[in-house]
Figure (cartoon, rainbow, N blue to C red):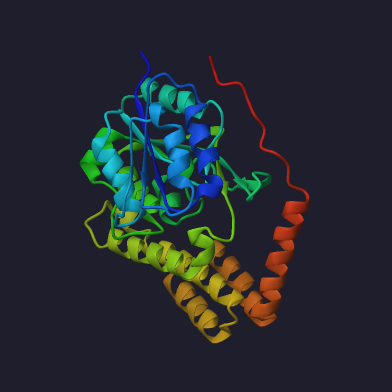
Length: 320
């Protein structure tokens, strides 16, 4: 018998993409799926879309909540599945994802978390690029290089009960926070398959507020290192914080704040002088000399090129 998987979709005013998200879950044709949608009280066509599929949902609601983390936690607390996942209302699963995930958990009872490859798509669903990700240790995830693409992440329910649910006070990096808490105590595995498509569009939270995103991640990392940790993990504090300072510096480069960028570079190099940090510091320093407007124009030009050469996500037959 296949393991039961519970998927929760938090939703708020994203009717433009919601049906694609819902169909990508239901069209998995996974026989032991429990799917719930927690809508935060949308005023667009989201509720009409949800009602269209309500006979295939385990539960849905549309009412104000405390935000994305709170909505997901509500679903996970109701969950009866042994495996938990959440899919935002602008992202989609690749065909066959749930069966691949279930097989990985079934084959290793000690596994606490899995994740996989992820494509980045635009508003139309065309592929822009593949998100950089590979098999990683907790150490690499702590440094956020590579970060785990959220829609590909699935966790065992018992592991979540052990380490705690999503932090409802986090609005951008709740998945990062959960992954390092689970990774500290449980095995994790990278599945070398495209499991999901993450949508890149102007209204996405990370696009609207990139500085808040990185600052929240920095606060999560600092809090993590305040606890008693194994020595080999505790030793990663400075490289982790240095990497976050450089991420913040990159964002400020686009805003043209060269003095603060150079201050962050000095702080990063003060925390850690590893070759990777030094190389990244030199790249960010060069960006600061180019000026915010030029950096932003180059970034937009890159996005335009990606769209010109975009293609439709491939489909594959789900494993038998």
